[in-house]
Image (cartoon, rainbow, N blue to C red; front, side, top):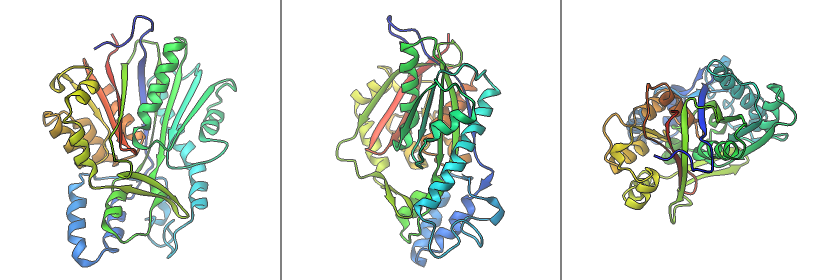
Length: 360
């Protein structure tokens, strides 16, 4: 696998630090959601919740109330908080969670001398942006070059790392701090339909921070790829409403992904021309068990090929753009990787990713 063209130095994902809040809201959500459904649909919801293979989802919402949907919780009232209240919470909690991830990163690699900051987030808006807030709290130089990637959804980590790679390829002395931070639990919707409730069942909060540079440490970042599936733009959506962002995740998504991966041309693009079985590290966005199953079956992967992705899903649920970074963090802990592929799906319906390999 070619990690760099003759005209460019190699680029490396040196290390990743991850962070989640300390409030587990998964069980409380299930109890709340099933009570909103007619009796005939509760059994189906219970089966789907059990099948989701998610044990924990973490939230920045205060744990002091016990549950966000319980008495005294953020969503306790008959009318849920408006978008302004949710964005006010985002402005405080998103930078704090991001900084916790940077602290975990700093335990692994020096975070001094940062020249560029790339931040991805799709669960909130604030101006000045969280990139500026984070830069100020980290005491980064006022001259640090900032890029804020917003509202791209679950594959935004790919866009962020791809941007960092482009920067280092053009400026080999650059040290790029990449942050993904998502607070999905700020967007609970008071619906009584099973499909949106099952969509909300997937999502939790999390943040990751990575250092990308020309230093040969970690994983070499290879060629990126991107594609958009035809006639699929309504399958994954975030709709901005007066009560937060409403997620629409169609049950057709796994089937459409499996159908796309049946195309040998697309698979060759994803694997850099190798057979899927030759890839020894798959970092697939843990968007849900059915999505991971679709990828595994479509590519005829072995039963342990997506073990890192499945472990992230069990422990954290889907954290939108931060999820892929959590998977890559687990892969970085491996002893060796020869040929890796990162792959994520999101609104569009689009698939984006990149090749990666050993640092030497």
